[in-house]
View (cartoon, rainbow, N blue to C red):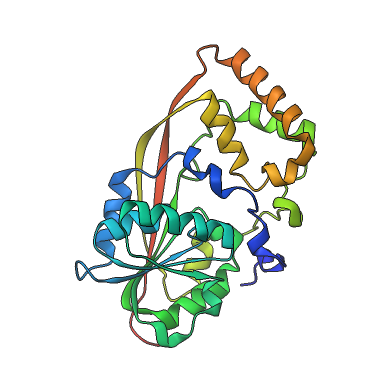
Length: 271
C-alpha cells in the first residue's frame, strides 16, 4: 500500500515554531499511558521507541515507568524542548533527530513502538515495514490518539475552523512547507496489510478542561495555525479568535468530554 504523506519534503519544518506551545494541548489520559507502558513487558528497562515524539509527552510518561525510551522526531526544535522538559523531570531519554527509517536495524530489538497523534504524517506502510525489523516477535506498535476517529470533535471546533479559513484559506496547511494531504486509507488498513495485523482497540473518556488563553496557545501548537505560519498576521488572527470564542463561551472556560483511543497492532513470529 502506498501513502501520499511520504511526499512531504521537509518533515522537520512542518511544526516550526510550535514546540513552546505544546504544553497548552490536552494530555493523554493516564489510563491509556499506563496501558501503553504495560505493553512493553519485561518491566523496568524494557526498550521502547516513541516515533514522532514532539516534545516527548509520551516518552516522558513511559520513562516515568522505568522504560528505556528512544524518542525520534525530525524537528530539532521539538527535541530541544523535549530534552529540557525531561531534564527538569529527571528522566533519562535518548533522543534522535530524524525518522524511524534512519535507524539501523542493529538498534533493535525493541518490545514496543508508540506513535502519539503522528502516524498520519508518516509513510505508514514503509514505517510498519521498518518496524518489522526493529520490533521483537510478539512486540507491538501502539497508536495513541486524543480522539477516537468516530467521536465528535469538541463543540467549539467550528469556531477554530472558521477563523482559520478566514485568515489562511480553506486548504489544510502543513506548516510553512506546504499543504496537508489527507490520507485516503485509515490506519487500521495499513496495520492489516502489515506484520502487525492482530489488532486491539481501547477507548476511554476524559475531560478536556482549558481556559481561553490555553485554547489560543493550543492553536499555535498546530501545524496549520502556527505562529511561524501566521507571521505578521498572528495579532489579527488572535483577536478574531478570542472575540468569537468569548462570544460563544463568556466564562472563557471550555469543558467537554472527549474519547481518547489506543490502537494496538501486535507482531507475530518471523516470516
